[in-house]
Length: 140
Ligand SMILES: Nc1ncnc2c1ncn2[C@@H]1O[C@H](COP(=O)(O)OP(=O)(O)OP(=O)(O)O)[C@@H](O)[C@H]1O
Ligand SMILES: [Mg+2]
Image (tube, rainbow, N blue to C red; front, side, top):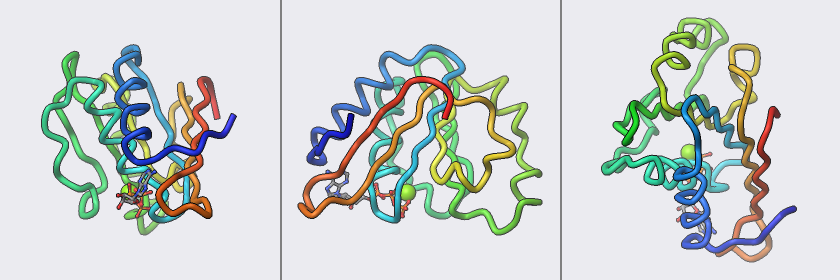
């Protein structure tokens, strides 16, 4: 079911999702440029107990935050230049160590991704203050 949410509503939704995730969650964030993936990922991180997710992942592929149960990894795969770069990531380490993995642009690392526990799809709407949001539990 797609819902049209304002930014505060989207953030509240992300915090709520983050607070109900169980260890080992893999959350895929799909959507066009500016659709709200980073906004949502930060909110999920907050729900996982991350106090400071202020740094933008714009200039790094992997961001590591401290959640209440353990590390939260936020990947922005838009930055990936080649599939070799994706292969170079320590996927096993991320999965083994992370309380959660939040992945922007998952389509770019599809073959490396562990099975997703949640898939979030965001899209632009005619109303520029809202985004269409679908949250599915289970493999993408
Ligand atoms: N309802 C909304 N939900 C989320 N973001 C919104 C909403 N309305 C406006 N915005 C704005 O849209 C922008 C979303 O940017 P954000 O970086 O989260 O998108 P993104 O999908 O991560 O983009 P990119 O593809 O560049 O990584 C922000 O500037 C935010 O303030
Ligand atoms: Mg982003």
